[in-house]
Length: 103
Image (cartoon, rainbow, N blue to C red; front, side):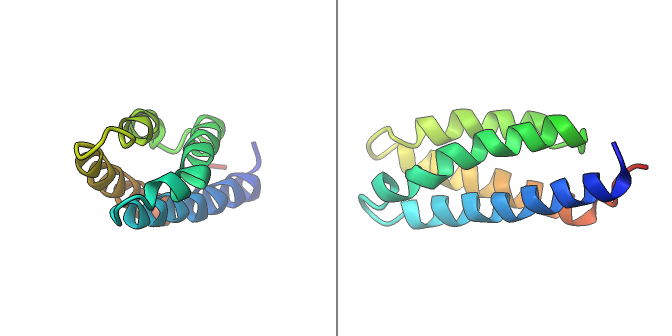
């Protein structure tokens, strides 16, 4: 894959990962996760596709984030999983912002 394509996909994944983190953050407000999951769950799957395509080192954390996004529906305990999701997303954001692409 061309390096400019990899950089574009990484940028899209970075923006998507920020949106996921914001969705988890909004989800900390009682009952707000019922609204924010409408974009969190699709975006974690999109991030997995980006991670596979670019091989940028975020694949395992993205798979964990998929699991966490579903576990976030558990009443009361879901808050813990949302915080875990925020942390995972922020780690991915940090890695993606440092990633320069291969080519």
